[in-house]
Amino acid sequence: MESVQFRDIPAAGIDRALSLAYLVFHETPEEEKRKHHHELLLDCVRIGAYEDGELVGFVAAFPFTVSVPGGELPCPCLTFVSVAPTHRRRGVLSGMLAELFARAVADGSPIASLWASEDAIYGRFGFGPATHGHTVEIDSRRPLALRITPDDRPLRLVDPADAPGLLGAYYDRTRTERAGRIARGEAWWREEWLVTEDEEDDELSPPRVVVLGATGAPGATGAPNSPSDNATLPNTTATTNTTTIAGYAIYRTKTRDDAPGLVRLDELEADTPAAAAALWRYLASIDLTGLVRAWGRPVDDPLHLFAADRDQVRVTGDFPALWLRLVDVRKALESRSWAAPVDVVLDVRDDRLPANAGRHRLTASPDGCTYEPTDAPADLTLDVRDLAACYLGGTKADALVRAGLATEHTPGTVAALDAALHTPLLPHTVDEF
Image (tube, rainbow, N blue to C red):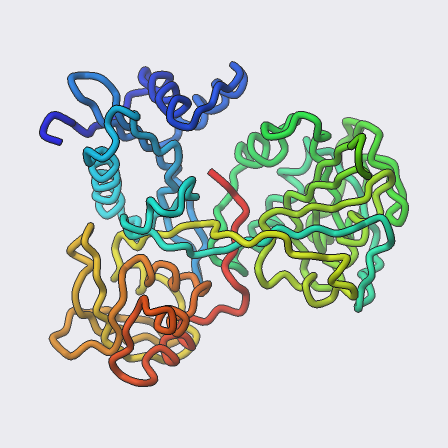
């Protein structure tokens, strides 16, 4: 480690950093994708590990803002985490993350996040899985059976070129209802959500955008109850009033020779269960398709309850999604809202950031929160990674105790803490980075 230095990667060094990342992740992207990655990294914090002037490690962080209970916080979101295969197990990753954590504290960002390529790596750096996602599949060879009546307001297909302006305000409003969701600028909408060709499957169609409750130009042909998805969307200017939108879905389709066509749902947001039901029914009734696959749905998606036939609607996968790190535990806890009063002493273990470690009295209520050092006996002992998993409301402290990952010293502590951490909706994100 004495021979490795950690410093910023200049803009002129981005291509070299990308070459290292592609080596580590066994990728050979085409020029267009390399150019896209290069442009993304221009707006990122870029930290490199250098030995004798050679780049041997690389980590970047998007300067995102993430919703937390009661508000939002700046949050460096890690990506392209790479260590040269010749320099594994030499402290390169530890050094880069230490540098990034120090900068986050200095910049006033009390949390950091990532999507883990390998779950086993990041727990030891204090990251905990703060949100989870479900993969859901619907057998759409027959009409979708529902226990509720779908919203009967009109559905309209809109031109993806108009979608950022149309959906942005709606997304911003609904984003505050769930923790863990990033703020999206127009560039993120266009370059990550609405790019014409899907990088994982070039046989998928361009993105389709359907909105519920909208007025104005439909942007494409097709009746809501018998939609056709084969025509290219015309380049029309949407006149839809965003205040009338009750929900939307972004999806792609694919013809398969050996099976009915596929509808891949990328995102679905709705104001009410009835609005969600209308969008799901639409997706399950697209002509020449027989399977809807939705990756990254919320664990508490109401579809699981209002679907009348769970043999038709199945959860086929469950996975940790956004991993969170409490870089500054005190500021993070004082920056979120609390659902109920709690007064407990937490003994937090944090080997990477000693300033977070030790006993602190957490006193919180819907009126606010304080978190101060104390010599009082601990009511609950836990690791900072497990506190991070609880922070957004997605993991129960009681579950940690029952799993042997935390120790309750004072009976009733975890019940009180869980009540205070409770959120009406589980945290969720589907924005990968």
